[in-house]
Length: 572
Image (cartoon, rainbow, N blue to C red; front, side, top):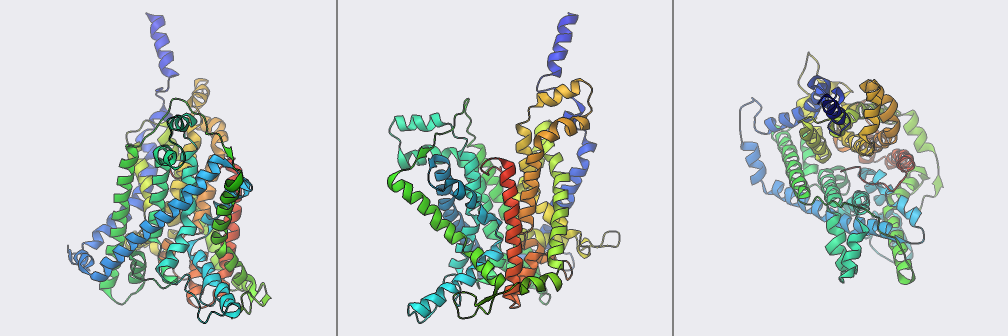
């Protein structure tokens, strides 16, 4: 009896359900994590929601919400924003799916280069992208100058100004989100499933429709949700190309004016509506994915086919055309950053470093603030994100589902709405000080915006580290922190660093929240780009954009090296 009891104890201790202090994680240990999320995620959302239903005296009222749903202009802005988001999802889905499918299923000339460059457009902030398109495709840009000077066109063609320009910029910036998620999801499809479909006559497009795409649903839905919310929440791109009848643009314009109290209140209502919409879409997506949970008992990758004939020409041609279009902004920003005397000519007449000299000597705050804020944001992401990932993978806490839902919610929150929420939540004095008067609010909002990337990357790394390695260390007396430091951390540090770098790379692009929260002296490079551009200093704006591109490119290169494989899975 004693032997069997001892044996049962040993089996329990070394089973996957082994109960130990690290796996249980008492509430006090995770309390700081929940306090951080409550203060900087839940409280701002609650505050802005309450403000939407109260007047200046704090009395409950529905008049502002009623005004939103009865005002034809706001209803048109809502319709246009929804149509824009859906249109961007459609265009990015086509480009993203084709890119992921070709990269995973075929071998062709230039595949390695295309695989890397296809992800590159994600480092371009939409604000910089639209500016680059204007330099090349604008009314006085390179293409129109050539058409009028050498082909006899009497008037410039409108390539970018208007609704179609927003769609073009957002599509070429966001399609890598679909590609990255599909690379991860589609790459896990068991080859036997597609082979079985082919054996009963399901080939070509029918196989893609019946087998490949349905099995890629989890990655696709995640990517499509991100694309929709990014396009839905971007206000800088529409304003630059002259489109104002969109919700994000109206939220920004209403908040930054300090004259009409009603307009300011309507900006708050729009922010609440954007947050509500993101939560609704997130719930729908999660419920849909719960019904599409595919799993197989075995796994073998799909064998790549070598393209020959027309296929060997058309696929590289597809990537070439796609990347030429996607890299137009890079060309425009580079020429404007170094070009001098560029007026009524296809290309600059002279080249100079003067614009870089000016921004470095006269406005160094843009660069210094960006690196300081984003660096602090990354530290916060690691400090908060790694414990969250540990809780999700290594504990049996009942609140794990809530924690995972909060992290996912952050990913879907529109930056414009979050910026408005922070203005309302932290403008009230606490101990005599308003957080909106302290520069620390900038790295805080950046950290909250990019926290999910660090969490997801660390979470993925922890999943491939078997718990038996940690249990073996504990069985010989190692404490919890020593196990993490000596065993777990050496095995997951690449995942942590990859997520942190991705958080940094996307933080330096952030414009929606930072433009709303920045006051004189706090400006980042994206705020500087917007300021320079709207004031007519386009070359200085391009110089800042070029710096952002270089920093983003270096970050992406390091991420690519660290990941050791095609990128994907950051978001789910």
